[in-house]
Image 1: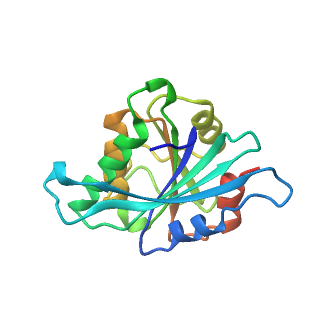
Image 2: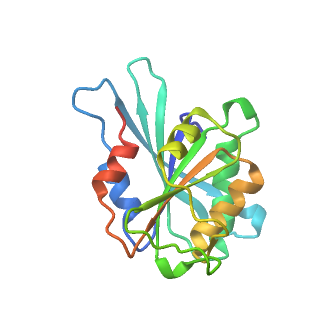
Length: 201
């Protein structure tokens, strides 16, 4: 699976965030970027799943030299246990065999506040924080730049959001360089803020 060094991974869900970001990311009219759209469907036979594929859409932002700068991957919605199979297969394809070309993943998500638990002496709520950052895997320029600008998630945080928890577990096991942006659904999160973080210049 050919992708850029930076991949925005979107899990299609009921909150509409993934679809909104996917459709809202467009090159600036003054930029030299072009977009290339493609679909993918990865077989899941090795997991004993014969009737479904890990399917989704890819949008690549390509500069004037033909270099893939950013890829946006929108994964179709799946229910457990197929979700883990589809995610694992996609991440394996993204990781590839060469560690030197492993892409950095950026994963925006919105999680209901009720799905986040931690020790009583800490509080998830904060009037000043709308998006937390979780950095996983090896440090890259991208993970360092993003995580340094975002408040870190509260300590001892437990996530009871199956899609996100599954993703976090898999990227941690595979040691993929990843930054997860977690917005609390109980707070006002401006779509403009997301666009500023993810804007392709």
